[in-house]
Length: 308
Ligand code: BEZ
Ligand code: FE
Image (cartoon, rainbow, N blue to C red; front, side, top):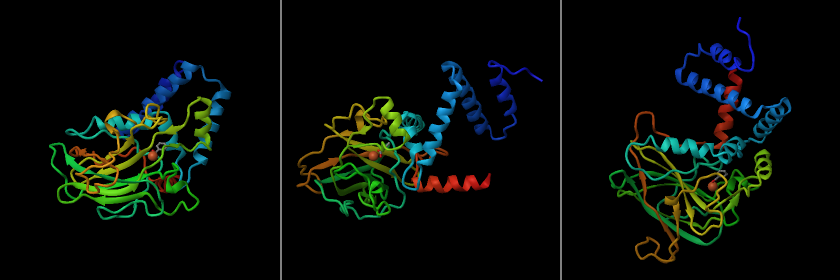
């Protein structure tokens, strides 16, 4: 029997877990325990602070529903989601566009539209055209690539945040044409505050942060044989472009809508032209999503809960 004190406890705990059969799970849990113990030692965590942390995580879990993912939001505001995305970016094969956050407002099975149609089916606003190509790392257009798009309305609200949360608007799925082109219409989105009425909002206020995201449009692109790209385009000139609460903005993703573009499929509309590049999929690299549809997370979590 080994004597347990504040120095030996880490090794004792690691030793007890050493029989874990899945090597990746073992690595992750060992590192988690080592870093958690180091954190407690570094700040000399008190029992009351420990309990406050437990209360906080409990509240975060209690806030989660099929339409709201407070844990993803927490990961976002701590910079963890952006970091995991950036690490995943480095694993791509060949050049690809920069990624950005999936965020908590992604939904699966958004309505399918034909090229040229508008995703603003219930909302009015300043109409814009979104167009460009989906390319491979060699600059060739990818035919029939799938593009999912979602965004806020002019008030900065997603459909999921409205009273009729089950009804979809300002989101849709398109397929590129035979040359990898896409073109569609929408309305200019507004920047918005992340949900501030839960525990993550309390954290943001305690840290004296503004809790805002600059105006943006989300894209999730994929095609067989290519690595999925989760990204977003940020509208130049938004006052919060340099201080995004969730660290999603990078220079290459900032766009300035053109007032008129003779080469646009909609030459009389303001437009955002952007060519996205997908890298080839390596082994086990199909998904680049740091997140998921909240309803899927809730469902899987419930199944996991029942299994234990
Ligand atoms: C979003 O862009 O939808 C988002 C990302 C992180 C936190 C909140 C919202
Ligand atoms: Fe967003």
